Image 1 (cartoon, rainbow, N blue to C red):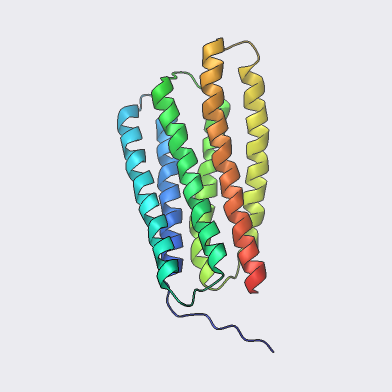
Image 2 (cartoon, helix red, strand yellow; image 1 turned 30 degrees about the vertical axis):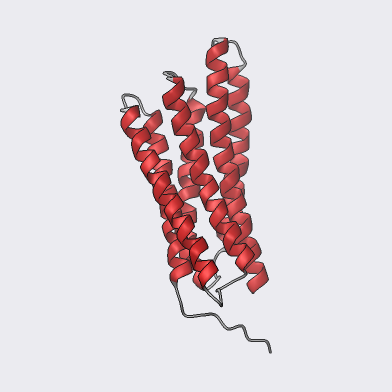
Length: 205
């Protein structure tokens, strides 16, 4: 019967959990950015700070991989997961930045629905990262993220149809389309993270 040794060092698990917590902060800031009456300059500044913190965590993971002889799972998987989590934060940061730069005032209701999808994805990812330690009880995570990604796809198509339905001016359509696309990119990036977690769980089981 095969036996796989896992190092006791919990640093990687702690860092992945920390990285996922940054995503919860980012998703909440994104929701705040779209709320009526929000101080967008302030929210954007806090998002930049959160994105910087997320970058620092990613760099810590990479440095840890490069200085550790035995890693808890495949090095390439660690790199991929760290990069995937960072990509989510980058997409959310982009969406917040676009809202600020484009000075959009009116949003289709479906944008709030997309942000709710992102918030749920962030919460699930943050809840699931500590489970990497034992690689157990993770299947529900990637199944639910896949379901949420499908919901996000439907919202994305419905939002585009609304934008091109004639109720928005041409310039507003262009601005909103960029923001909507960034939100969709963030949701897709969450699914990529879930797929990587699934690959790790299958490979290490």
